[in-house]
Length: 433
Image (tube, rainbow, N blue to C red):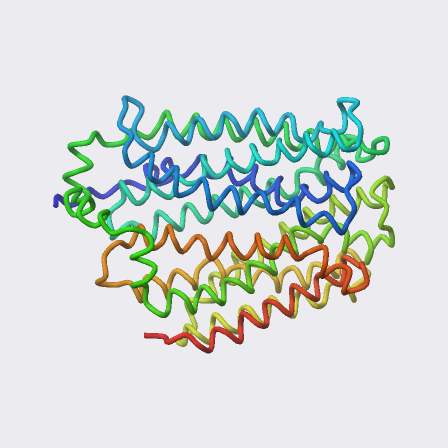
């Protein structure tokens, strides 16, 4: 196998630059979906059902895009065609979804329209997101992969911050943050419009600057013969032979991702109830709370970046993982007890610590356990199921749990905190080596 050449900083940057735009779209979806459907008229006890679609689309789309792009060779490359098509569809749907309440449809019709739009949005975002990870795997050598993924992580967090603060920013410059009952405010609609424009411009930049290798070059640089030999093992066989660490980390993931699903689902209602003392989506206060949630999510992203710098300083990886989840769990539990908007920065900075560990630590344990087994790509693809399946289960159980905690969405933050603490407890079952 021929060694892959070193790439300059700007070539590594170009490989991932489109991820900035994709992450803006993903942040707008994460921070505003519950707000949009609540504004359309969804009952809080039904909100979690709308969150089944994103992880469901992820678990279906990502393996399919990976498999199909492995077999695609054309003048535009093998990964970039999927990236561009996914981004183009995402742009179209981003212009439609926030207008679900503006077409004169009945509440049920607006809900169905929004649900279908959400399905296409998450499918297209997943389709656009996955190729960026593959491009780094295809074209970057082992010495530079850490640097390449660091650049991708920076662009990911930067895009998240921009997407999260958009509604607040557009309200600040004078765009209306209130609308008639059942209609999404213009501040949110314009956030999606501008996010869509940035997304397509970033993706066009990447497609113009990145030239993928042809089949012969790819085979030479990636040892394609060995890859084909490894592909003969089926997914069920790989799962049967997976190391115990694969399943133990999956248990930790189950509690953690369920907790964060409840954060995305219920934070808008929780902040509206705790800080603005309202549960009515038709009020200006509720929509103001929705803007502030974007700011809090941006604070969480910045806390995650800061804690990611601290994590490598721990000598004991298990301790770092468990401690981060405990800190995140405490942050969640604090949310219902702080009635000042700015004091809410504290719990969301703590939640950022848990998020940083969730992004980094599981893959550290799993890839170490898989050394020497082969099928690394297939195993990591299967491991994505430990991210998607917990969210689907949590979404199905969300309405029932909301009833059990008194139908207060702020109490679901405590549920999320307990789930992270359970995840921290399960870290104890892991073996560091």
